[in-house]
Image (cartoon, rainbow, N blue to C red; front, side, top):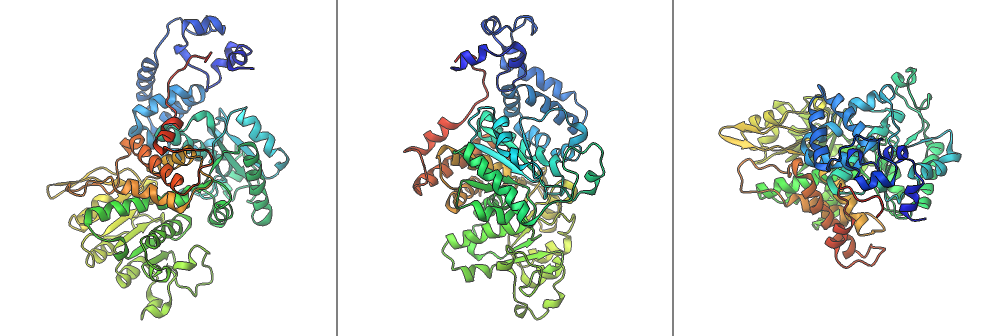
Length: 554
């Protein structure tokens, strides 16, 4: 049965209620005649541009960020083309609404606000016999190329939100499409519900997830394995993106699967890529060498350790021996500088834990300030979610030992940031090279306008996904990840006073294309493509989807 015959079997209401088919008032007169839509819609036929203008005017009337997001989600649930055409025209304005930080509000209130499942798949550890059936039903015959899956134990900044964390997968996929043109008919958000340790959810009568403490260990991993096996079986060209898994599981899952299939963990790898890109941009401005830098991470959880590993791998790629490279890295967590004799180190922390014999005052290095004074880092990255910890004392001490301190307070939302960009510029007399985890306004200081780059993973992961999918790559390798970071890090203008270390989010689509081209080319260079491809840029262009209405009978 071809598409036209299939459409003819749908009722007018089924077409209008399908977000992949619905055009709303943009259905042509011929389509209305053919599919029984006359009288179901107002008689005027609008263009997509008219719909976008009309919808944006309605959006502007919403009084709060949360209400704006709810409105946009309603458009998304009814008409994907309209949603992405609108999003594409207002990327910088919509990013904080569609995704971080407003998405935190909708996650925290997901059950209370629930109206539509948003084409997501909700998988329960207590109903594993239906995993494959659920994935198949949610896909509804679509050619799924990209899944974002979360168990929502470690949503950055807000923690464990159980089934309500499905919104993070939905939001992530929206950015994939808006930024890089991933076809929305080829994506699927999935949540793995293995319980929650969030007592507020367990005691909430409206909570839509499992009312039990989180399951860990072998039973949990068997659940994840069953999901992965089912997804691979149903969708053989799958790019699998893991999102916001907890500290105890995230790295283990990535390590298990990264050499078996095309998989990606944004918290471990994505944040690492964007931080590396920011550092490369900063060094492009300062004219310094990567391998001369001393790196300190404040926050050594999944994100902090993952970023550190990515920067360390760049040292290796630049020719430094592993033992020598590790001497450049220091992790600081709530107990202070991490030492190798600490009994509770995670596997990801152990390679970078230091020996106490390196310091005459090792037992005193129990705070960030003490660690900075002892180590003299040239790069300081914050993933601690402890607000205000990059104090004037810490920053001025760091700046006393390096000409251009690279300081990235990445924790978000805003209330959890380690420092404000304007303070970092002021405390270093304009010498700091700054990127933040949340959008930050330009800083005016002594006649210079300092543009503040946002270390937003959205600058990287959409293009990374598009390039990998377009190249039909068997795996996502360190070489492809490095290519992504270098493609962004080379964009900054080092001769402009106050230049940002990263490109602006408002040009997200442009830079996602840059990343995709670099990643696809690297995949071809490594011989990872499953389909015969000779031109990486053409493959990316052919894969990219654009939001436009097409005749239903094509």
